[in-house]
Image 1 (cartoon, rainbow over the protein chains, first blue to last red):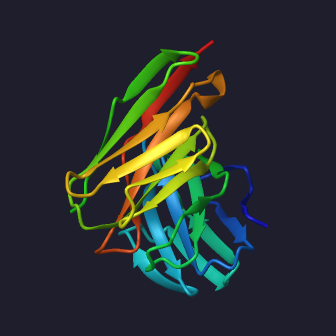
Image 2: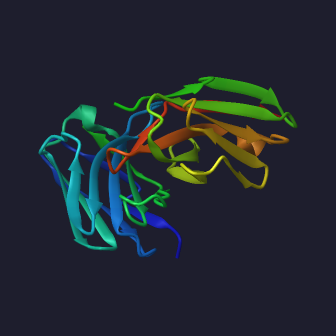
Length: 115
Length: 112
């Protein structure tokens, strides 16, 4: 299995809702990433998990809460989002974030719309 | 702080042409560089990863080169096809962090 899966594909939520995005990989990768991508812009890093521990938080607002329950699964919990948080949320994984051979593999993304 | 730029921002070519996409980075102390393609509204597909010790990598009609000292990488696409139409992004992993820094991308259109 050489793919990263993300669910759901699309999500529409109100500003008072609580929802979660899910990402899964079975390639034995020990680094997992959340990126946010606005239209016609490159992906912006949000969080990096290395060996199931949060290693990078790029000053992301607390309304985004990541969780890595095990080495294959990465969640992003959403609460009290703003309309400007509407974007494509991409998950990626790599063998090991600090190594030279850390090719990143991306999932298809979740298209989030906040009303 | 590492900054990555890509030229051109957009490119439109007739089918069959060979083309070159450029990626520049400001800090030459990199671990590696990765090229991706992205179709509209989709995730990123990895094309090639070049380690800092390598000069080039090839996959099918794609060839990527790396010149660390000048802070440049090029992606060469031979005999372009309409199916190559997408946005191409380069991303650099530097020695100081655990993440890739992305360039803004080149939007390629290959016309039949």
